[in-house]
Image 1 (tube, protein in one colour):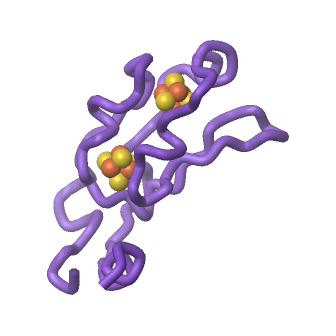
Image 2: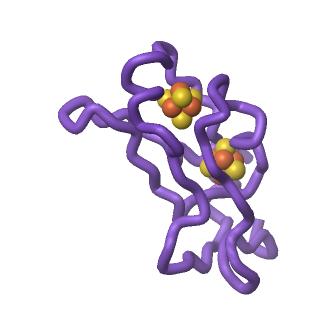
Amino acid sequence: MKLEDKLFLVRFQPDKTSHLHIVEGDICLKQCKEKPCTFFCPAKVYEWHDTEERIQTAYEGCLECGTCWIGCPYDNIDWSHPRGGFGVMYKFG
Ligand code: SF4
Ligand code: SF4
């Protein structure tokens, strides 16, 4: 089974507010050329928006893999686990 097919089986209970935030948008814009968050996240939560010149986040699809804690070279992602009862549910995966 391909990874994409496995991810399709994962279910989510998204909270109303995000559990992850970009700390300083200017760092993404001016210092971080490679923008590794746009490819280290397996759920593609982070996407660079050319027009708005900022990282957009789709927190609802976060797989809670924890890569955010170590992946950003500028320590510019404020990530915590979602509140209890919210987030990813792996029982179908
Ligand atoms: S890796 Fe970090 S600093 Fe770079 S674009 Fe993503 S959030 Fe911004
Ligand atoms: S914890 Fe993992 S799945 Fe969630 S946003 Fe970070 S890299 Fe993506």
